[in-house]
Length: 349
Ligand code: DAH
Picture 1 (cartoon, rainbow, N blue to C red):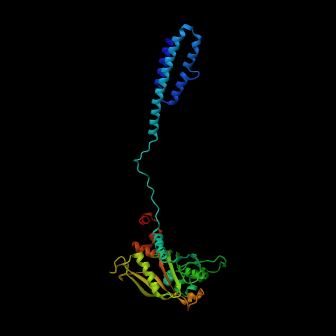
Picture 2: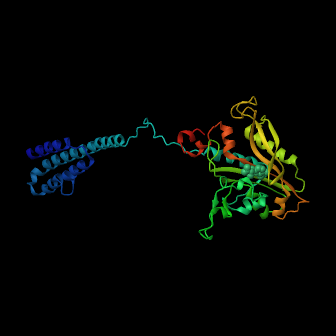
Picture 3: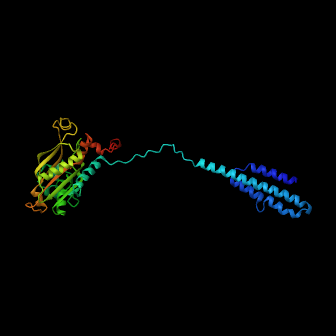
């Protein structure tokens, strides 16, 4: 009797300290396991005097039931506590502000370049590409630019020294240049195709020049359309559509006679100054007009260079500077801002 009372007290004491499922299991094994205290005591029943057995057996069973009940109760309690602790320790504070990851942006020049390409592609123009390191022949000769043309002078053209030439030979003798315009792609495109054709040629060009409106590298888009009945009216129509899509449908457009060696007649295209609306300001130098394009009817000498029948075919060509158009569109007054990589400037677009 006495020993069982002590056993129960001892169990109660130990049970009071249980705070994990693991220690609870140890407790269960200690009392109820195969070699547990209660199990051993029950086995021991056979060794006590017969007349004491029923009483002792009953008491042992009572205490066993009590322990089983307690363990079941503790199991429920401790597992509820453990679940609660787990939920608390794994909780996410959804009220914390997220870390800001600044999004990337398309460079303003590339943005306008894509816009230009999209407009011409929508009018059925293909897109051609040519090399940035170009032969004198494509960059000048085939475009009817004579040897004494000012564009060939050293301050304009980057000459590339040919690796197979003797080291004493000057780079001025080189017939390899960084293309100074996208017009050589006209020649390459015409040699590759047969009329009728129409394509644009966007890309980088290089000139030995640097100030608020010139950088040594900039972008141009060339355009060319050749067929049997292509006239100056086609040129005007295509460029007017382009300008109205680019700068808005009510933008005034004017064609002014000009000169380019590879077109005849040649024109420069102006739009009404988008800053002053034609009143005259610093940007349009008081004229109310801004030059945005060079254009003209393809010179017969250019057709001869690519072997096209000059009696049968006519065509128009045009060329524009992407940085210049971007500056006008976004009212930027210094071209160098495009290439300084200042995120404060670039993130505005
Ligand atoms: N190549 C000229 C330049 O770089 C631009 C140009 C003018 C291209 C008239 C043309 C054209 O195709 O017809 O300034």
